[in-house]
Image 1 (cartoon, rainbow, N blue to C red):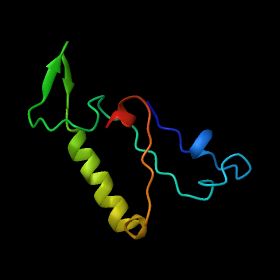
Image 2: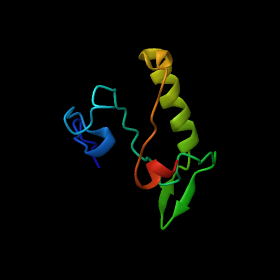
Image 3: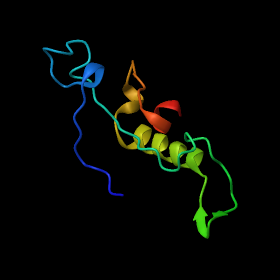
Image 4: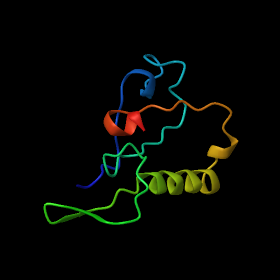
Length: 92
């Protein structure tokens, strides 16, 4: 699957200031679920399921994403952050 480079959202993630005056100007970061493990996986061995390799390393992926965002963007200067998600990404 290829991730889309542009997404639009409703509700508190909407960029429409008429519909979302409180958060419309906030930055949004989308972390797509990579392994269905809620960003909790930290298994060093490759698992095999029906002859397919599974890499359950979501926790390492999440740590790398956070390290990148904190060092390469201005996220570390944020005073307030809203964390939202859906499916496995929201649970994580």
